[in-house]
Image (tube, rainbow, N blue to C red; front, side, top):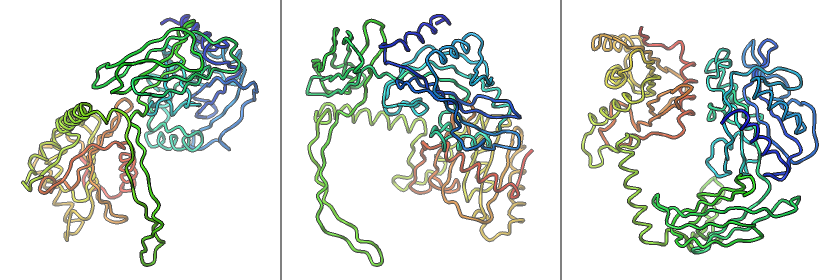
Amino acid sequence: MGISEIKNDFDLLIEEGSIAFYRTAEITVVFLSVRGDLINVFTRITFEESGDTYTTKFMTQKLEKINDDISLGIIQQKVSLDNVKSAFERLMDLNEWVIDGRNIEIDTLRVVDKVLVPSSLGVKVNTALKSAENDSYIIEFFSEEVNILNSYLTDVEYIKMYKLIKNVINIDFKFLKDRIGNIIFQFPITLIKTNIKFLSDQVQIEANWHPTLKKIPEVEIFAYIICDDNIVGSAAYSGPLNAKKILECGNSDGNPVIFIKKKDNNLFLSFCDNFALNLRADIKLNLRKVRTLVGEDPINLYRFEPGFRMGILTEPYIKRIKERKYDELTDSLIKEKKFVEYSVDGTDEHERALSDIRSIIKNNCENGVYLWDPYADAQDILDTLYHCPCYNSELKVITSSKARYKTTAEDWAKQQINILKSNSDQKGINLEVRCQESGGEFHDRFLIFPGNNYDKPRVWALGCSINSIGNSHGILIEVKNAQNILDAFNDQWKKLDKDVIWKYP
């Protein structure tokens, strides 16, 4: 889509009665101040229906220091539609972003065609938007390279910046790194509020139109029911949507997807999917009894009574489909080494576990491999990280004094170095090992792949140390909160900068 078409979309979205009745726009700018120059970190422009405007105000009490030369600031203002349209067109035509007459430096941005962002849970970009309870259209300008910020900030300073931003405007860019450097124009849809209910084989849609609207517009409604990736029921309607509309879908055994589109401008007004069909009503009965523990507060007891269930779980054939999909998911997790169980029957499966770990390393090691294991020694490193096929990939190990038992730290370090030197020619090896001798003990074991600006980190929990994995019952599993574990590893790594056992080359 060309520049003129995107400008036309902008005009259509802010047109009175198109999807809302906007009168102003709130502009929130997160920026870095570098020796007097302002650099865009993130900007959000949210269109609103309130008529009040206000001049720039600081959301931070002062510029927050990142390092000696760089500080972070967050400002906000509310401007007229004419002002924001002028800024939008300047951004489109000249790739310039100006607030209050001050130029804010930006990378070369790529504008993306308008996108509908559902208010559904799990839609990641919603965490960067305002009024996420509404569906919204956005027009987003993407900083595809983030060259300017990368030239100023280290990885550690990025993390510091993320924390400062989250404390002020509750956007966690640690999990939205792709939005750093971007400018988002957000158009919340307020023309209609819908209440959707699922009744047997019917979908009931209750519509509450904007009070300013003089005439109810004609819409198109599409509803379909998905089960096992198949469309098992559907319905459609075209015409004015008054207070209530009931659609006959035929088969209710699945998850519904419903969207409403305005006929005169072809814009979506509402999108719903994955809402709760499997309703349950359970009861907790207060027994008015307590359990007492010596020296502690009493514990109030209740009885749990499972109640009724509504929805697709009541159908036996749906249960069979769910069981098959669960088996498929389990097989997939095992195949991709995301969930592997060892020694279920007591068999020693240490070599199998090592083979799986090497496979995981081989498939994920391009950006580095970190091992966090309090009992890791040279042989464990040879058995795992030395199997990384990526030349010069960054290998890091944090071990602890637990690994050396009764040996002195100096003797143990020499022993480990000799083992590593005598068992490999070190070709392509880029390894550093640090040992925690004191402080709070750590227990968990992780295999960490740090990722980069384009690839998210990945982390596997080992369950037990490398030297004993698979010897007894245990589970190797990929964890979801990879970034948090990586951050914790990096924090600990910095603390151990004087506890290096070996660094090669």
